[in-house]
Image 1 (cartoon, rainbow, N blue to C red):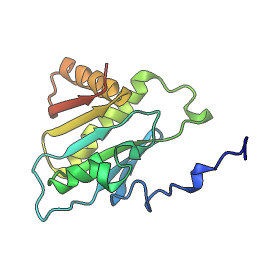
Image 2: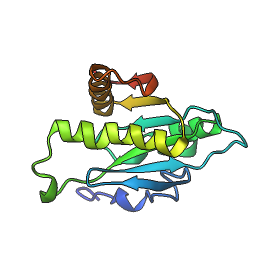
Image 3: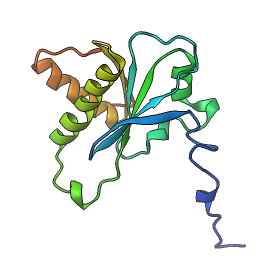
Image 4: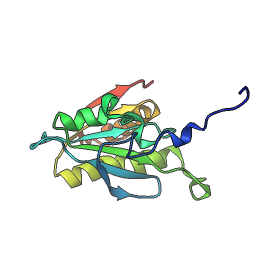
Length: 158
């Protein structure tokens, strides 16, 4: 009847019908977890891909369902794919600054992907404010004279 609302939270279950691409946490700190996705090809490209989603969304914003998953597409095309999964901030992160998120998350993720993959350079993709964070991180790296990112792609980023 009128005034009743279906509880849609029970419709979606992570790993069952949303975020179905297989991956595992390979690194974590107070700000984020780094997920590496299982390749779906016998060989992968030499240069890995790091995806930085917006910190206001869950890690699976780009892995909603198999038929519309950017993550599944990347691993299906042979990209060794890593995604930042932002931690939900609590009181322990109340004093964290923008600079902390850039240094201890974005730049840390870049370094960690390079270390795990053994690649000098990576490719990166930033989505929404994740792209803004990635662009900020790239500016910091450029100011330091470092070039660990070979290519950067930005989706809905200002």
